[in-house]
Amino acid sequence: MTDTHKNQHRAEASEEVRVRLDKWLWAARFFKTRALATEAVNGGRVHVGGQRVKPARAIHPGETLRIQRDASEYVVIVRALSDRRGPAKEAALLYEETAESHQRREEYAEQRRLNAMTVPRLEGRPTKQDRRRIVHFTRNGE
Image (cartoon, rainbow, N blue to C red):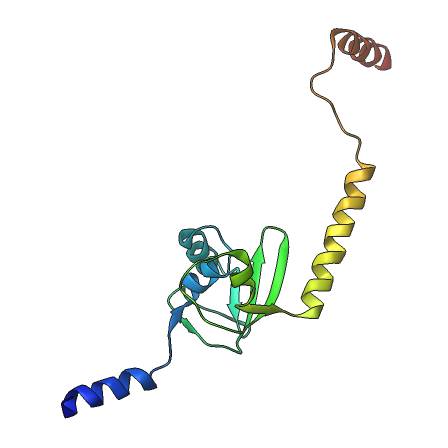
């Protein structure tokens, strides 16, 4: 090996693995596509250490992310880096959700279940008989 090749090899070995935030979010399966991950970061729905960031920001293990997805909010700590999307079991090893975040999401899910039980379910369009009753009720109610 030549000296320049050895120096180049040492420089590569000493460099940290750098992964873009949008790629990591996609690999960790928070978003189905990188485009959705990028859109979420640009839209301010992903914060690193309490700060808004750009999709190209490099993330490092130990950083705290706050991710708003749908009606849920995740607070996770980055444990490992990957820019490859693998099975869900591998993706779960990339981060650790905080206990408070998990508890809040569980409470919200329970609240949604209870709300869904109290709301009456409508089954399609009213029948002809139902429509006649509605018309009769509204005309006589005036």
